Length: 311
Image (tube, rainbow, N blue to C red; front, side, top):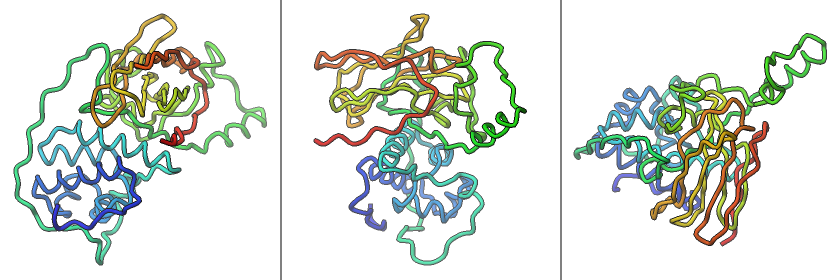
């Protein structure tokens, strides 16, 4: 990959792989940074930082790059999800804000990014995978957390203390608690049971996803993921062994499962089930080692990212 600045040695492996894939995609399409910025509505200076491994672009910019390059977005999104998870594990999302990236002034000076076009053909996008019991992340990877920290809780608490807040429940208290508000700019294309059997990445539900229940099982990490915008959940397993099985189970016994494929991701996630609250669903596992079990049903507070396990 001549012409590129060497990536930092301390960069997480999944982040490194993602940045290298970004570089290959840009080169294969023969795009300059200016052309890339125009095609993705994401500024040249932001792309410079992303291609040097100092930040991660938003998923929309990644999809726009894939569309402009004429390649399947699934591979890039799969790498992006893993990179986002790796960056979150060290204490930050690493993501560029999409609005800031789109509008900021172009940076000048030496960045180490090659801006010369490289002529090479792009690949064509393969057909989409039909719905089934679940989906292996060989082209999709782990749906990753993009949950944003919202600041409205304090204002709501003050309003309630003043006596102005009233319960909006027509149903249960857990419906009011459930919990994190959707991220405002997340665009989703399903809601509730219309998400059943759908991929969270395809439907945009990963944009505000958060971990509602989790369990460390040996070196593996099992999570119940929930989207407040979609009112839907899915199960995910990371640091797994090929052949391990992850399953999403709803209280009415509707379920989807997936088996971890034999690929470098060592991860899998299921299709979604609609759930008015995370308390309606849980994640279960059946490992090749014989270990099996389930998380608690989901809670209303976001859980932290998994901490690394010593090898």
